[in-house]
Image 1 (cartoon, rainbow, N blue to C red):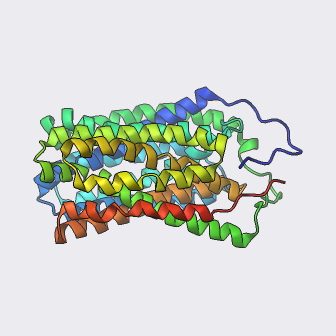
Image 2 (cartoon, helix red, strand yellow; image 1 turned 180 degrees about the vertical axis):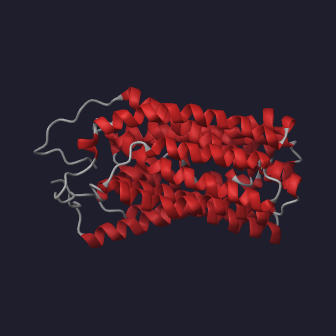
Image 3 (cartoon, rainbow, N blue to C red; image 1 turned 45 degrees about the vertical axis):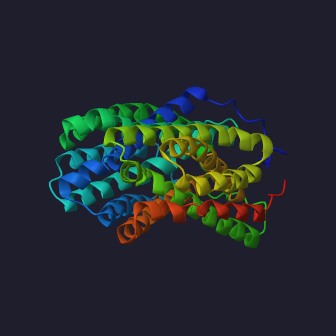
Length: 398
């Protein structure tokens, strides 16, 4: 698939400094938020939490983000808000500060909600900024932008292992300084974004571009993408929320070592994200989408039946393969609904957060009722849903 180019001027070149700065800020934003998830063992021991309560924390954080992101994106499609970017980063930093002083489970839930609000403000506009700086290489731009977030997510377990575990919950507050630095960079990016404002939104009174497929096909394709996002993020939730506990309970791995293995998995997710977007630019989004999710299936099926070394080894191709789909999914959806970049970005980032939160909550209840090992037995079949991607249509060229 390719964007419609007939009758249009050649796109401006890709603005890599802007893309790099946006990716860096995405790394800082998601690092702040990953510290929350990576610190679950600290909260579990400090507040005597069950797996169900841990799942509820994730649900609060991710559903808050998922409900607001599409609304933020829909609003900014009409009225871009360049300087909402530092506001979103500030909300994430404030959530981390609240976590550092939380003395009750209710305060943990409030901090989780604040982190979700920060994410919902940051992601739609930052994704639009990346597309604006893409110069037409939309898959590449989405991958560069998203890999920053994945790198930030992978840093959380390392920082918890080497700083938070030895120093305690209060040390989380120091990382809010990273959020302050991100706010400064995002303010500069907002100024660049504002100067490009004429290219970032349709002129008043002008209709948005029409989709290249009939409405029924667009809705059907969005339904398929929803099912794919559901399977992908439910499976990822088993790693992001429970992989540390799985390694500790199944293989008696010390907590600090388990955090390092989680970092390895998240680093492979970052690498896969960087690969998926440019590959979609070259061979098309659809092959990347179905190959990424369905291609994870054999590794996922094998993982619950191997030892520690095998589990760690399998986690790398799992993270690498399954993460390559998201950039392709977002750009594919943007091409289905041209002119709705903010809404589509907010919808799919929101779905990722929301379904990940629902998955974490459901898997926490399942783990309490059975065992953490049984959770991985069940989740191993989720990537089979990747076969649904074969039903996705190809957008017509104008």
